[in-house]
Image (tube, rainbow, N blue to C red):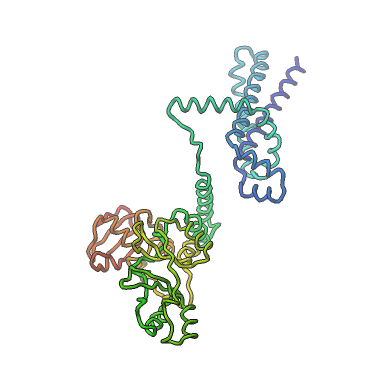
Length: 427
């Protein structure tokens, strides 16, 4: 009798250890760094390759592990009930629950999972091979279970989405990790802006980053050569749009290098700007910033004219405009110093109405929303549901706004500051 009890106890201990393996395997395999596993696989690590293979069908892997864990727990409970039934009769169910629950909880669940969390990558590589065997062996049963679950969910009106946007999920995961480490001080503010900026490119359109047509400095192609030279040399830009008859009718692009070459060959009055100009590249404003960046790189271009769906001029976008969404302002010796953001001694900021919200957020490390408007003026008009008069004040999204200047229907200057007290209403 004693030998039988000893054997049964050893079997229970073995089952608890097996349950610990399943718990650690599930936690490690789902928590392992996909980036690190991919890197190791490229370096020839076969264990990392197994981890990646298992995670390609995570539902099947988790199903096999959970099935194994449940079989072990049921077996441990049945054997324990048999042992305690022999010793304590009708009290066996109660004693089994009191004794087995803490053993399974501590040694079979919490302990192994905690260990797996602290060293997920290493443990995942160790357990990958046995779990791979188990997945293959239990594949028919797991497939049947998945079919029953999916069918049951459909009967109650829940449909499992089989077309998950993996790239979008990956971006969200990376962005979440960056934000978490930034809050903990592990990532500097500038690095955070660059990483998040790169991830946000796919969500931005050219309209979010372009220079509006009202801010474009362009040249009349019919001007005398010396006047064209004077205006081109006074511009801080190396490329300028050329228009004919009216500013919205863009007929080409003048590059400073081409202009200098023409002057050296034909003199100040002898060159023909029609022969010097380059063809303008027109791009729709609905294009994503990410796609436009790819096009800039593919075509080896730096400059594009932005048009709407009807072909009307809306603005221009440069390679620098898109890169600045990632790295911040790119300044050189010809850039204009005033960018429309002027911090005041009292902590407030005077802002030109045309300043993009994203630029102000980046400059001040603020978090004003940019979903409904591109510029600061646009945000105030959107929230006020009207075009405010100079002197009017508003408070929303944790910031206070005061209209400083208005020109016709445009807000040209505002004062913005963080709210010190909560619960302030817009006026």
